[in-house]
Length: 142
Image (cartoon, rainbow, N blue to C red; front, side):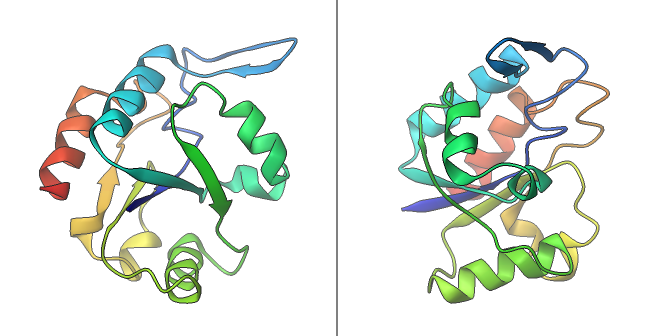
């Protein structure tokens, strides 16, 4: 089973995101492309976003209800995201079948091989997770 370490801001939230009475409405295109990816692979989500510091796991599951995949857990809160992901991998004895999807990879690259990273460049300002990221993920998985 693949593990997807998922950032939220810049991946799911973009300039096209809005809020309603039930919470945030994520960028619909980003949700659609992620769901297309999840339909192709057997995976679980580990939330690596800073959102895990403000929301409990059950709240994250509710906010991410439009993703057609299980929200498994969150990474621990440590000194930076790369170490947090590496620590989760070590503690859960999971070493090679994973991807990190994030729009800020500077710290992540220090700990995680590039072959496991999908960089959503300028994600918040532009489009978040899109067709190009979907294809990159499929290429890295195969």
